[in-house]
Image (cartoon, rainbow, N blue to C red; front, side, top):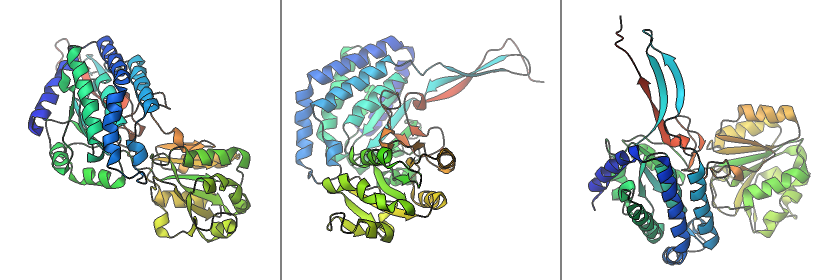
Length: 415
């Protein structure tokens, strides 16, 4: 099927959802979850083909990899989405016209949502479940790295939709390659919204080339500031979790900012990083504090390229500051406005940090790893929006709706 036919079919499929009750959608999501677990071997075989083409040293390898635990978690997320209330038809505001006619502002679907993403086959499940639950059809454009995984996953979903009496074109998979991306970005009148999920290069390309509306997601240059009043016993494990839990995800820690009076604690903070072979790019004060106390081959001098970098690997920068103002200046200069954190027991400092940091998610004494739709109770996420228009932070069901005004009159006319 060519791209134009896919776009037209998706538009028609989105219209078919208008009359489908939420209970039916929930049944379909649970059936897909069941079939996903039953067909785990087939999915893993396809995923193994994709993994065989990628070096395990590639930062995207962990994102690409599926295993039985991850498939079980994917199925659980779909069942979770099925339990959530429908975001559609909600009254967001009520008022009256000057003539007395009532006005209601209600939530409605976008229609057709295109998703462009890299080597993350789990996104195929997440996007579909959130889109159908919010009344949208979705067009997926995955990367070539996950081509076989996505092909099998989307095939399973389409077959289940058909078996359940629903339009299989509620989800479609475009061929990998730049040509498909260009067609999707220019599908004005056919695609209502495009959401890129991936690194800065992908997001910038989509922003600069799309003619359809775009919501930016993905790139996360995340900082944690260890304040002069930070609790080492509390803060060190939080920092370890933010960096080491999964280094390849967008909420992982990229830069530790530390107050100059706490440099003596740096060796304790970095002990687990040494054990995991984390390369540390340290400024001069931090380098001197770690010299002889951290692996010589892993401790390097920081330069300007060390800051503002989303590493997605076992690498991290350290910046020493004289206080909160300097920490905030550093974050303002290098942040991608994704997730930022402070470790402090000073409530005034914490409040100042939270109010002044310009980011979608701001944490006090908590790991940035929590920036995730599932952790926020959304069941799954379409991505982490780093912009301010329409949606910001983890995007769940409500962020996949727009609204319209319903005016119910009785012959009123404007003077």
